[in-house]
Image (cartoon, rainbow, N blue to C red; front, side, top):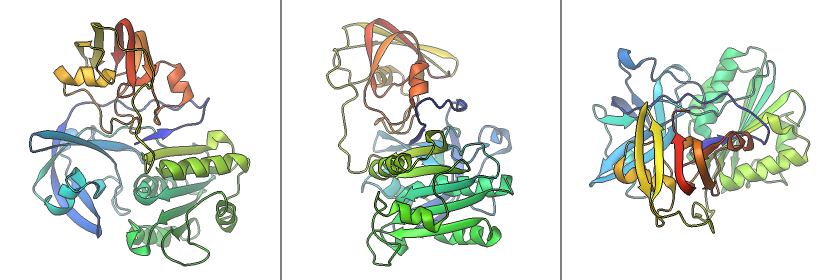
Length: 369
């Protein structure tokens, strides 16, 4: 998962802290039937490495039956301990990491994590009304952003809308209620149920009911109102389009794509010229130089790198999380459909190696840039 900024918006570069670290699990708390909150201990020597800002995420690397799984999770500390390293993990496929976390993970176990990273953040606008709209598991970064904004800006307001199938699926509802009690004059939470009849807060969030929700929150577009969206592709695209049509400033609308949802998976570069035989790929990562040869059958630059260098960063491999972002220093690449880089980052030479194919005889990319 990663954030998508509007065209022309230049964000501060995300911190590229690298490496993998084994951290002990201290607590596994059941949140819903399909989700748990996993808290990890951070030793003193790694305090700076795992210091995190609201909206950042980590990648978990897990091996099962000889296969390596990587999953990206937002850091979502509880309201009473904003510095805690806690991940909210939801069951995905029956044999995936989420299923293991729900059924097999226990205190005393260890997980292998990358340091926090990412650039999903609220605009720096003191006294703003921050409107956060989440779908399903998209609540995890938005809960952290809400708590962070309320604590650091005593003049801001925060309104959070969470779309879930039923009330029982509302992740972190109890914690958000505690946050509401602590900031009762400045924080509002609405749950929109997509599979339960509870007018007017039922049905999917779309262009038809969004204006009513915003009116109820006094959150119509204006110079002092910002928006942060996180959830499936359909939700974030629908809400962004509706906000733009209503006059929202694109620079004040931030989004993070949590999943493609029902959208079909796409090849990295449909119809791109085949990678030339023997293309030399040089990758700079963690202060080291790695060189591989990409062949015409490699779907993307990342596939060629992983054959010999499994430590290069990646997670989703679908152009969502941005973990495999790198800057093209020499040569050219063709970047296919992706959801993690904005127009300014693409213009600056960044690509997602899971979505890119090399063009020409040589390409050099820098993961540390």
